[in-house]
Length: 142
Image (tube, rainbow, N blue to C red; front, side, top):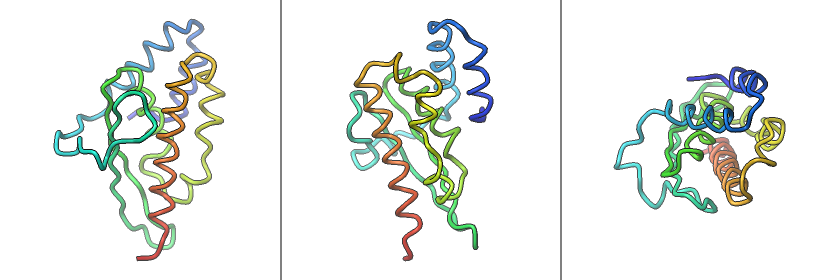
């Protein structure tokens, strides 16, 4: 999987937004296939214009707290790419690190806020909030 630093660096190398869109779509194609059994209502991200499914696997990590791994998919190519960007930022990280990371700042730094439709931007925020909610829930003692 591509790291968030690689994604950020690649964005700076691409001057043209058509090239950046193609890169985002390419990132989405790198996502592992989401099994059909995961495409259920409970895994849908609310607030997205496109259909987005997201699952979370949580594993304990001792004193550092739980580690969260995400998988997901969308019926829209550009949204799959946005999912890949979020997973590069968040997946495989401790819950506390997830809560400290500012995906919206990254979103704006990459220029996505000014080049995506308001619906896509709102969907991105909904995905971020879903991930952050999963991290908060993972920190609640059982």
